[in-house]
Image (cartoon, rainbow, N blue to C red; front, top):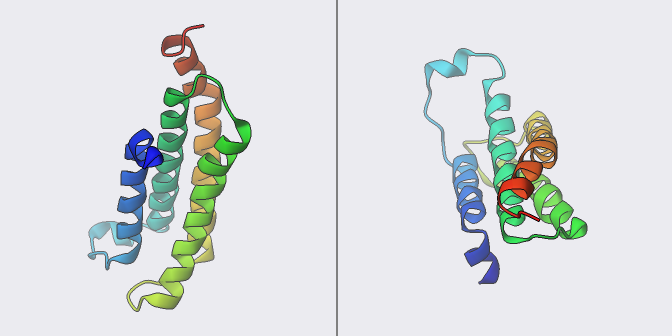
Length: 130
């Protein structure tokens, strides 16, 4: 219950990603753009990673690197892999795709760099004034 109260936005985003990953998406004009789904994957997992890190940094003045690497990097990547496996094995309207997994992982990596070098210093300066 502690994690749900401390990281509510992260849990909400995780639920949204799980739902979006398992329902049948409607056909749109955007489907004609090559690899648009990879951009969507990159943004979903990049956004999730940014939210996890930001909530963590907001609630903790000092950083536990092991915990942050686990929750802010490994958890989204593992979640991504599990969802791709579930799509491939448990749904008939979706398919698992290694390139989706790579786009998700790239989103996590880009977001980690963004948070580490832009958002974290900003929060340290303005929220956790030392």
